Amino acid sequence: MSMKKIFLFAVLFLLLSQSVFATVELKPITHTEGKYSISLPTNWEYALNYRGASLVAHRISSGPLDLFAENISVISEALPLEITAPQYYERNLVTMKEVLKELRIVSLENVVVNSLSAVKLVSAYRVGNNKVQAATLFATVGKQAYVVTLISLEDRYSESQLLFDKILGSFTLMP
Image (cartoon, rainbow, N blue to C red; front, side):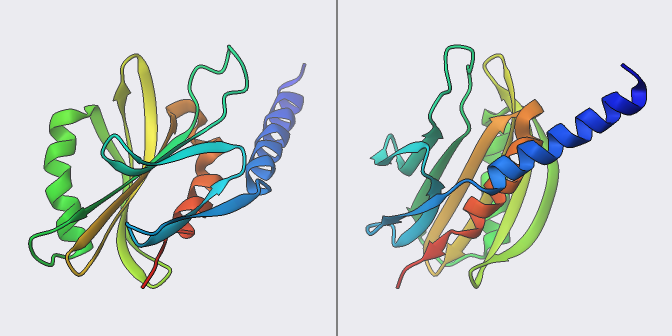
């Protein structure tokens, strides 16, 4: 196969894989205690208030060769005083550096999600034998803070990125 055909095949594969994730149907999940909603793909399983997280979800595995499913967690916590999203991120970064093996910051930016000022971090680190990449949203409102983290295998992150951005973009606080 010529290099030109290989390149065209690779571009076609990338476009098809992105369009598959772009067309995934999302359903809103409301967490009334946490006062937020977020939309998840219909082919993901989720649980509320599980092991310290207000929400955890993962893509349903496609079989025995699918060893790692993309997943999300939402953690909300009451703060003793009001701080900004960048301050909350900086506070969490200390713990992340201690806990996450081989932590590497890929990108960091201030964003607005549904009128909510937040910090979006894309990072890479090791979980067991897996190299993963994560998109994490840090947000605060008054004395309430939220961390929304979506994780995939590092080599599959580019395939998941559009979907992750849609999920993060759906995060909405309720009055």
